[in-house]
Length: 372
Image 1 (cartoon, one colour):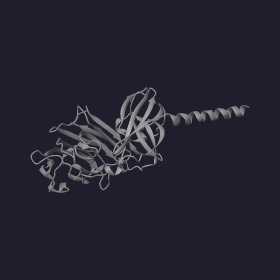
Image 2 (tube, one colour; image 1 turned 30 degrees about the vertical axis):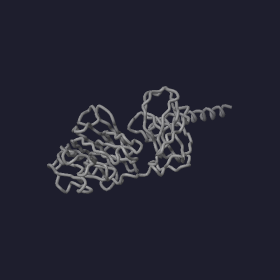
Image 3 (cartoon, rainbow, N blue to C red; image 1 turned 90 degrees about the vertical axis):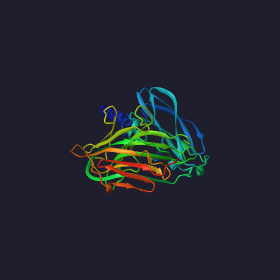
Image 4 (cartoon, rainbow, N blue to C red; image 1 turned 90 degrees about the horizontal axis):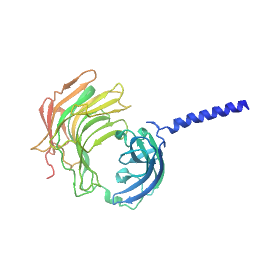
């Protein structure tokens, strides 16, 4: 009997330890702790998407950001926008808009989950979710008109006009950029996505990895009238899409037309820490750790970028996008001015998008054929 009692006690202790490890949410092992009573709250159909709503409750976990994601075989395929909520609450309804850009298959079943995390910058990152609840298996409807949602008005294909400078050992970049918002393709009349951005980027040479900060103007296919304006930062690791991204569409830091702001990104390659600054002030700074960035960058890029040929690049001939005070930092050194030459400037089509050297650390970009 004594031996059985010892064995039973050991089994209980092992079970308790495993229960704690499994059910307590942490940054890299999401769990269902706190979130409960998840259910399907209905689906609304539109011409180009379906809105799937989930209802859920939460015990008192403090203030966190909640979002809905779609998984298949434990891989996230799509996610919705995050909302800030303070637990505990009951029967809150949130949604995800599933559209043709997610490349899901009509008639297939997908698992819908509710996630919670404490960091607004990690919405869409399963590994950063401190809680997850579900799944709610649902079949993707075939009643919305997928064929009407393909690009019909715009010629998609990203275009750039930019400064490029190969510098080994890079871990810092900054520039002062004038805010010049343009129009996006078929604004107010069509279903196409479109955007334009201006940013400072530290990139790995010959690899699609970067950290960048800047501002942008954008419209999604289901926002026929509205174009949004924002500043943002993002970090791209070795995976197919940026893993970390943050956008802000509101006051007080939203760049206004004609404003000039200093944008800076810094990398600490000893621990993979990225820092993003606006206007060189400690009043606004965001940080993120990246396991893929225990290495310096090799390419400094300050760029205007558009999604479609017809989107406006920032700036016009009479009011160019001025980019000044361009400086970089090499690991172990301080920031220093560029000494830019004509070979550092690239435009995908000089008949469409102009770029002009002003000095060793300043240049202009503009759209030569902007929308009226």
